[in-house]
Each structure stands twice: as C-alpha cells, then as structure tokens.
Amino acid sequence: MKVRCRSSLVWGVILLAVGPRLAVAQGSSDVAPMPEVNVVGLPEFEKGDVAWMLTSSALVLMMTAPGLALFYGGLVRKKNILGVMMQCVFLMGLMSVVWALWGYSLAFGGESPYFGNLDHICLHGVIPSWDADNGGPVIPASGTVPTSVFMVFQGMFFIITPALIAGAFAERMKFSTMCVFMILWGTFVYCPIAHWVWGEGGWLLDGRFAALDFAGGTVVHISSGVSALVCALLIGKRVGFGQEPMPPHNLTYTCIGAALLWVGWFGFNAGSALAANASAANAFVATHFAAAAGVLGWSVAEWIKIGKPGILGACSGAVAGLVCITPAAGAVTPVQGMILGLAGGLGCYFACTTVKNKFGYDDSLDAFGVHGVGGTIGAVLTGVFATKAVTYSIGEDGTASAARGLLEGDVQQFVNQLIGVAASAGLAIVGTFIILKVLDATMGLRVTEDEEIQGLDLSQHGEEGYIFL
Amino acid sequence: MKKIEAVIRHFKLEEVKDALTKVGVHGMTVTEVRGFGRQKGHKEQYRGAEYTVDFLPKVKIEVVVDNEASRQVIDTIVATARTGQIGDGKVFVTPLDEAVRIRTGETGSESL
Image 1: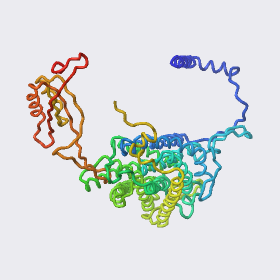
Image 2: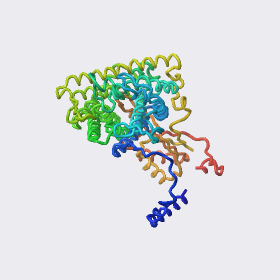
Image 3: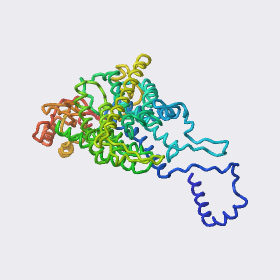
Image 4: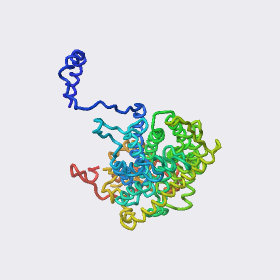
C-alpha cells in the first residue's frame, strides 16, 4: 500500500515537470477511447447546497448513534445499555433499507394530499439512470441538489424518529417484536404524516390547512412522542416500577449523548432549508438559542423546586428546547426561538415530573414527556410567533409569499397549526394502537419476566455491556 | 494472628496506608464497599423520581498482623482515619487461624 502511494507520488512529480509537453504529445495518439455517447448536458447543481445537505445528512445520522444511543443508554439500568444501543444501531440498518425499498416512495411519491405512491420503489427515479434515447445519464434533481441527496437526508429522519419511540418501552420490549413494529410504524404512521406535511400536494403543506413544520415538529416529534405514550400504556410498566429504584446508570454517557444531539440538530433543522441559504442560517441560529434557553428553563425549574440543578435536567432541557424549535426554525427569529426553547424546557420539565407522576405511566426515558409535549408546544407556538421577516420567500413563479403567526394577525395559521398537531397525533395514536394490538396477539410485546429481570443485554443479545475483570 | 478490617472514608486511605507502613505493616488488601451505619444515606432525584440511597460508598482495608502488633495497628487506624464527623467508619478484629504465602509455602507469622 505504502509503496503504491509513493510510486504514484513520483508519477505526480514527473507529470508536473513534463506535463504540458506530455499532454501535447498524447493529444493526438494516446487518449483512452471514450464510449460512444452524444454530448448531453448534465444538470447543474448548486455546489454549496449539495455540500451543506450532505453534511446535514451526516449530522442527522450522528444524532441516532452515537447521540441518542448514548443519551438513552446512560438513562437505563446497566443491564440494559446494550439493549438500547442495539435498538438505535439496528434501526440505522433496518429503517435505511425500508426507506430505500418503499419508505421514500410512500412518503414523497406522487401528489396526492394524503398518501405517497409506489413510483419510487427501490429508489426508482431518485438515483442516476441511463437514458438510452438521449445517450446520457439522467440525474434527478430536487431543487438545487440531486434527488438522491434529498432522499438520504429525509432517510436520516426515518431512522431517528422510530429510535425516539424506543425511549418509552426501554428495558422490557422484545427485540424481534420491536423490529416488526418499527417496519409497520414507519410504513403506516411515519410515511403518511411525512407526506401530508412535506410531500408534494400534502394537505398540511399546501392549500387550506397549510401548517408550518420546518423540520419535523409534527412528523418527527409529535408522531414519535405520542406513539411512545401509546407504547408505554399498552406494553405496561417495567417489573418493579415504583417499588424498586431505577436511577440512570451512567449520566456521563447521557451528557455526551445530549451534546452530540445538540450538534447534530444543526443538520436536522438548518438542513431542512434544503439549501445553504438565509433560511438555513436563521434555522441554525434559532436552533442554537432555543437549546440554550431550554437548558436554563429546565435547570432553573429544578433549582427552584428541589434545590439543586442537575446535569440530567440541563441535558433534558437542551433536548426539550431543540424539540420545541424544530417546527419553528424556519419561521421565527432566533430571539423568538429563545422563548420557544424556554417554553420547551419548562413545559417538558412539568410533563416529565408532575404529569408523569400523577398519571403513573412508565414512559421509561420520557419519550412522550420530551418529544410529544415539546413537539406540541413547538408546533403551537410556531403558529403564534411565525414572522414574515423570516418566512418571506419568492417562489419559482416569481410570486412572493410569507406565513404569519397569531402575533402578526393570522388566526388561520394558528388554527392550522392546531389541526396539524391533532392530525399527526391522531394517526400516531390510532396507527400505533392497531399495530401493537396485532403484534401483541401474534408475537407478544414483552420479554418474559425472568428475561426482564436478567436484563435485555443478556436475554436479547447474549452480551454484557460491562465486563470488568 | 488477627485479621483487622477497617471501613473508612475514601480520602483517608492514603494517610492510613502511610501510617500503617510506618508502624511496620507490610501488606494490605483494599476493596470498594458500600454500606450504612449512623451516617444513613442521602436522596437523589432524576426527572422528578426521588430515590433514597442507603448504601454509601466506603473503602475497606484488610490487614493481617501478629497478636502483639494488633493493638498498635488498630490504634494507628483509628487515629489516622478519624475526622470526628459521623461516617468515619469502623474497625472489626477477628482471630485468624492460618495464613500461607503461596510462593514459598511459609505459614503463620512467617508468611505475613
């Protein structure tokens, strides 16, 4: 390997020295024969947009693992850390394949208001193909980037959204059932909601009920958070819940995970501009300040209520602020973003402590308390704060448009936000309920009590997270 | 021979070790342990869930010495490990039947 590198370096030097003459000499005789093709124009893409979207896609993938894997992994008991990490990593594999085979098509195919179609099965019409008639490649475009870039960016959302639900049933769900659940949930809950909100002609994107959801407040957070609550209720409490202590086993992991989520979220939100433009810049900055305010919101609440601010509270507050700004990142200013982040931090703190304790459901890692509640607060407040200073855009046909929220006098936008929340939560509840009932009757949702007490690491995966000898 | 087990605070370990070395103790075994006495535990809160932690972390030293040396060793540990606050720990002393140095097979005091 080394030798090869060196020889090519030598050739490089020689070519530099005699290059021009060599080129002239080769010009007539030694050119490698090209296949017979007509000269067809390749589509022009905006280099900056492509670069930013590829970067964003990688950042969003990083949110699932190591981000969420560490964030959730530290929160469970030590006998279940691999169970949680495996769910995250395995979903990176499983959901990616489902996305390529039919997920993308069901989410973004066609122009129906309600459902995608099967036009893009196996990425047909998404990835490059050869056009025999014109004798050239066809590289489908989405805006200013290749469609494959748009597809893979959206695919990263298709991974993290189901992974978020795993927080609700952590430490007790059967791994095989979880795999089937996620395939069905992705297909019948995520894809339709994604199509409504982001798909061409989607009923929440265009027309009468157009709701603002920049990066997935409804599609990602409400859908996963509400489904998480249904999971927690139907799968039931962990053995010993409420009787024996179940504190997080390693908050240092949780802290690292939260920090990675914060960084990854810049791709999640600013990438949702689908270009490297002013909208992306605003989303990036608003995202950051919302997370910052979220930390303060949750920490101060904790400080006042129990006398000490904890690292788990600070991390949870950051994530709550990030969840809250997600739908709004392309519609509010960074200063308004701080208000949303603060509201997310306070609201989610209340949901994860007072509300959860009052109702007694076992949402192990607060997937509902953070994502369901934070997503809802964010989606509603987007309808309050959306400002034309940020949403102003000029469409392809040259007409200007701008969405406004309640504060700028658009009541309909606020109502549409509520409709968006209700519709996505509704499908999430019904879809998750039916899928879980079917799986309960066929495969069983939980591991046996013995397996649960032993821990998922050993019972589901035959491995241990910590082997100290 | 006596086996002296002392449960002490973490930050006193080095001090106790040095003091014991000075009075002629040649070896010891140390373990991380958890337990409670009069100090009792403390409360921890994670997202609104409150847990009482009864078992507090301490360090346990085990030293085996001749009968004659045991009084001095005990006194040294007690004097060095004391802060005067609740939670300083305890010393337990038991008679010991036998000790063997594995490398040579020496037994009794010879093996210490």
